[in-house]
Structure formats: C-alpha cells, structure tokens
Length: 70
Image (cartoon, rainbow, N blue to C red; front, side):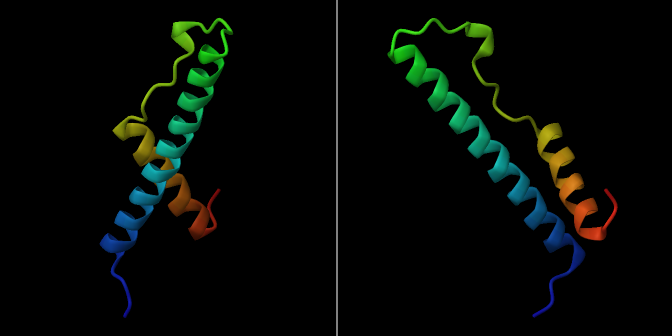
C-alpha cells in the first residue's frame, strides 16, 4: 500500500533520529572506553545528545537527497 507524505516524513524523522542516536552512542562508548583505560578525557568533549533541531535538519537533508536536491 502506498504511503502518504506524512508517513514518509515520519519515516525520515525516525531514520534521522536513529542515525544521530547511534553516532551519540558510539562517541559515548569511545569516550568511556578511553576513560576506563586511563587516558585523560576532556569533560567538554563528552558527546551531546542530539537535539530536535539536529534531527529535523538531518531529516530535511535526507528528504532533499531523495528528491535529488543536494
């Protein structure tokens, strides 16, 4: 069954959120791994959880890339 534009946008938002959460988790694990190994980590370098604006921005970029507008 065909999906309407709202469902497609929601899919893109979920895709963007998942990508950014995965990046955050990888950066967090890397930071904590290095910290556990005794390598000094700057607390300012601790990853920041993705904001709603970042998620929307990435979703918009995904949509534009599917439309062919880069």
